[in-house]
Image (cartoon, rainbow, N blue to C red; front, side):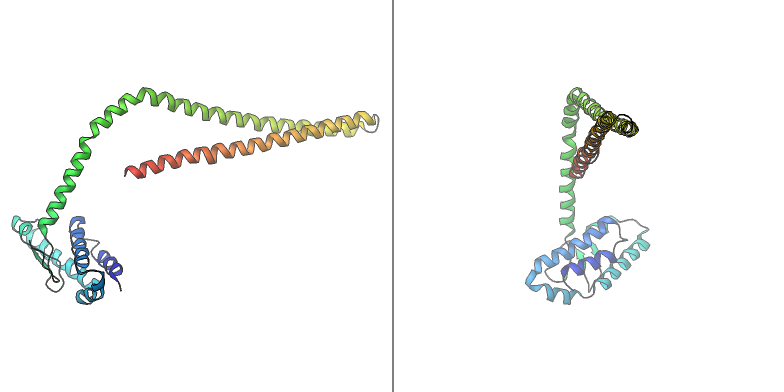
Length: 237
């Protein structure tokens, strides 16, 4: 077992803990590995033992506190101890160098930093809203224009498909007429058959144009727009 496996099993064992408490426990052991250094990883793993046992002890300690305190954290608990359960791994507002404790003051400081960061992000939102309001007169016409262009392209492709079908039918009719004329007027029949073949060729070209134009619009163009929107959405998250 290595550090990654240890943390995975520990995370799986405390998955039912409240999010903040689970993250605090995981952060404690991550910091413990970091302070020990990669060269001491095996020694730390031996010292800590089975992560499933640690996770079980953490869960038991949590449930015991919940039962004792009626699912409420008192001020004394917040300021003093938080037990992570393995071999006396208990915190008392100081981080010991051994298999000891996590500094709750550091956790609170980190939470305060995250809160300030969230506040700064929210503080910039009025500017974003103002910019969006200013951009609406430009964005909306462009959006409708793009939609109109896509609709126009789709209509054109549909029309090309109809033309290709009509030409195919006309080619069949001309071919039948030419074949029927061969017996009485051979040259005329050949001429009509030639026209029929030309119509078939043109219909084939129109069909290929329709096929690839439809593929370009529906697969490439619309797919690119969808990917762009999806990537921007994930980027914002």
